Image 1 (tube, rainbow, N blue to C red):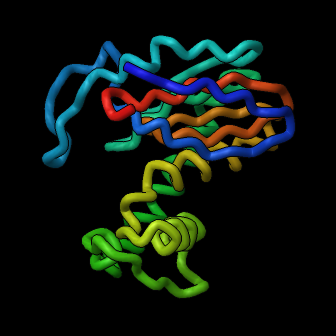
Image 2: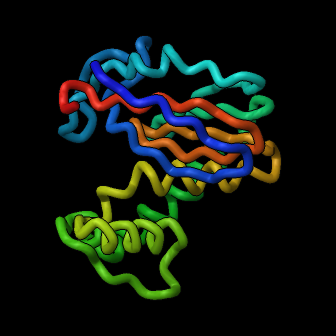
Length: 176
């Protein structure tokens, strides 16, 4: 495995996609809606100084969150709300979930949907390519008033908000 270590200055808000794969060691291998689970062994190396790390799972959403204190209950509420918004939108507009190209959405679409659509437009991909990062961002922003430092990892997509310098390792696997 190869990787890059990146130094982030304090006060920087960053979304990082290290393209990691899998689930925590305690999770069993199996399938979720046709997708194969793999151990998220990279989570075993996470130890952000001064932060407490905890997991939150709702259906396919499996987050590792680090904050100044355990905000599991608050994070669970945020995840449930974001998922409800996204699921309701997809039920009314299934093309959003099925498209491999950007999809236009109205200004009154839920915020997570608008962010996914904007990211899809930028990368010229379908909006579901942005789901993990959009959920990570929504949860991190929702927890920020409760903790000045928040790191949310969702299937390898990371959203980081912090007031302290952090060192982040980006793993490219065998692609580097």
